[in-house]
Length: 248
Image 1 (tube, rainbow, N blue to C red):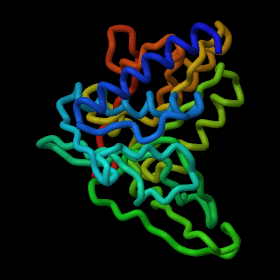
Image 2 (image 1 turned 135 degrees about the horizontal axis):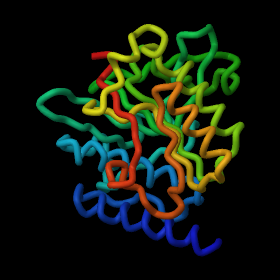
Image 3 (image 1 turned 30 degrees about the vertical axis):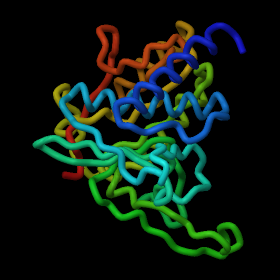
Image 4 (image 1 turned 45 degrees about the vertical axis):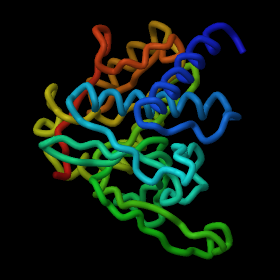
């Protein structure tokens, strides 16, 4: 592990401790891979983003011992893990990890983003499919018309294929993208972070041009350099795109 990895990892651990102290919950496991820590750091930063906009957070579905059960793989049942309810006078919604989206673009098109923002009390659907785990486990999902925003967290150095692949999350995971007037959704005063790709590493000059081009063409965020430890999405140097709730 290099010095940069150690620095951001320690900051994420500090965020986990602060979150635990504020909400009286503890991290339920000590042994996590770097990728899982990075995802948790992004999750907590997203919560802080909403808190900075005036939303109040409340832990939902904590473990019996009071721990916050993070879900950092796509294999778990989301109903067995914790998530955050964010509320304000304007709206209420949930921030969840690893909830599969069943897309509107075609039958059997489904994928699991790292973070997802959905309306409050939105039911996680489930079904059995013989082609999924040989029918031994249920297939948990939410339909893309119920997705406010889906986000990906990659503890990597950015490269063109990674940046382009995030467009699949936008197109397949957000029904509103093809069925709404984007100019009416993107709003610098909006309550939500536009679909975001969180990236640990920093980009070179040529890749930065690509990032700027993608952000100009699509209602997305590509947030780079998080290994440097700056997870403040509303900081002085943050350049993010916000949206109104597109399914309200």
